[in-house]
Amino acid sequence: MKKTVIGMAGVFILLSGSVAMANQAQIITDEFYSVGNEYDLFGNNLGGFNAASQNLGVKTYQTPDGQIDSSALGNLLRIRDLDNNVNLFSNTNAAGEEMTFVLSGVDDVLWNPGADSATLYSLGLNIKLYSDTPGNFDATNPATASDGTLVLDMKGHTQTVSATAGFDTTLGTTYDLKENFDYGTGRYTGSAILDVIGGSWATLWDTNMENDGSDLAFSFSLDEINTTVGQFDLSGTANGVGNPVPEPATMLLFGAGLIGLAGVSRRKLRK
Image 1: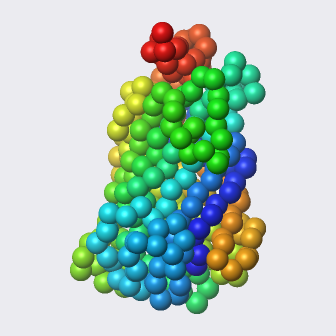
Image 2 (image 1 turned 30 degrees about the vertical axis):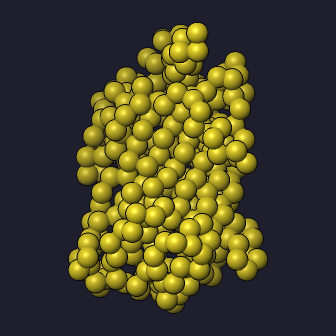
Image 3 (image 1 turned 45 degrees about the horizontal axis):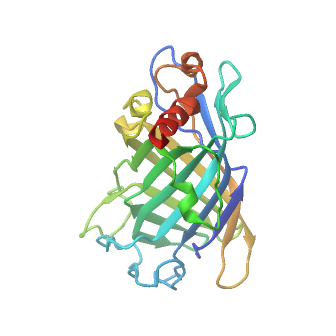
């Protein structure tokens, strides 16, 4: 498996919490770009994103080395209340406002290649979501993805490697991101559950009602679009579903919607 450049347009990420009477909310990304390490079938790090990072013993959990093995950034297309079929935010009508995200901290710990596919477990996932006015996101300039107001700060919810998986877990058992690559189809899939730890929307999304008491969830399915040696370009979708508090329809009563709140706060800081 080679995990290097991911370039995606129209990627769907649906983040969620759950409470009674709340509406389903959907967050849809417009652009999503990621870069990560490459590994051969024996777990050797081939360089890619971070050549200084560790190699991974096959089916052997390794203590995180503190080196980031994958990162990503992008911007949102819209946030949508699915029950009421209305947009809470749209980058086509938000008066120059934008929402961007940065994914970082991914530290690979366990590599499990097989005859048909390979699975990678990682730890340290963090996703930050920002509001910015005016919009200036440029995928070639990473700073433009994090120069706004922080509205959601999320970390990967710790999970435990199955004791029946046949792995050597002497050095650990935890992960917060699981990914799989199918050699035959070139399809790359993954999933994670997240905990809200900060940001101006923290009280809206911190519900502890997802799997194992987490707040949000997402999964993705990506297809290989570049088979050039040394590169691994992927494109596809990610999805999940849930309900923030209060329900999205109530959030619209705030005036400009969720994005407006963050935008007003940022404008005040600029004065």
